Amino acid sequence: MTARVTAQFVVGCGANDGLGHLRRCLVLADALRAQGALCCFHLDEANCREMAAQRGHEVSTCLTDITAPPAADLLIGDAKWIDWGISEAWARSGRFAARLIIDDMGNRPVTADLLLNHNIYGAAVDYAHYRAPEILSGPRHSLIDAQWLALRETPRAQPRALISFGATDDGSKGAAVAKLLLARAPDLRLDLIIAPVARPAPAVQQQLEDMTRDWPHRLTVWRGADMRQRMADATLYVGAAGVTALEATAAGLNLVLCGHGDDQDINIAAFSQLGVSADTGFDPERMAAATQRAMTAPQPPALAHALDGLGPQRVAARLMQLCDDRE
Image (cartoon, rainbow, N blue to C red; front, top):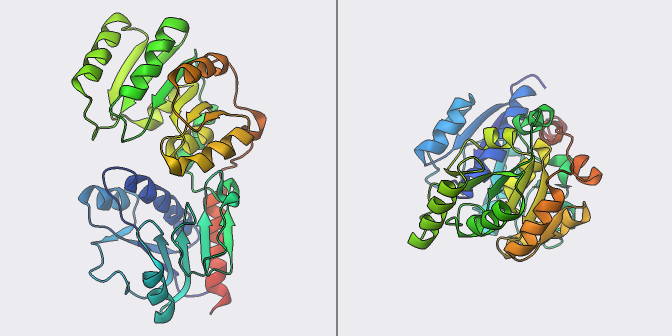
């Protein structure tokens, strides 16, 4: 291939899980750039545009007509914001050598040249009702930033749990587990993360203040946090089975998980098969007991070997090959 490959990314994002979708697309864009591609993101939120620009990618505002992105070799979109009609319009346009759609749940049928489900459970999702000749799935293709994998080499001095139940928890779930662990696991330090967008109820806020006052050297409550630094300090992740669980896996932490919404049940099942303590429902007693058992244990071997960090390069290489094949 002589001309530089161009890639257009159509990714919605916002204050909550949309940022997770953007982060994984940025990881893929980095891998594509390393293989010679020029990547452009169509984003509306200023903080999202800044994230893409800081990594050296071209940035444009959201498309006025999502069915007609600018012509490019590669078109990459996220099924959270793309339906069958949009994907059909992309296919009919004939302006792209290859179209990749990232799809986590298999519940929003689209047509594409390539589907990607990069989650631990990816291979368990049925895409029979989609129109796609090729599917890349499972942790072999995980779009995990190398910064998380680098944390595997970080020395950790003592047991420390990172507790996070996602952007929709106002701290009540984290506080319930933390209260039990403070009483039962005297050697365990705790970092409790509350998302910046969450607003704790007055009773929850008072409980958090009381615990940090009574246990100043064992509990730190963060309203938003540098998650890379928190994982660098932690030995254990306790919380929801979402994107953070995959990042904690990459970082080498042991895990204690619970489902935080119906869409996480399939992830719970996959992590359970890898030896992780994972329940579909939230039970603070069970989570605290599981944390006590896991606090000095390493990752289960199957989990430790699930991610090798080469997923972004594999996906990027396949996309570049599709471009070569269609020249």
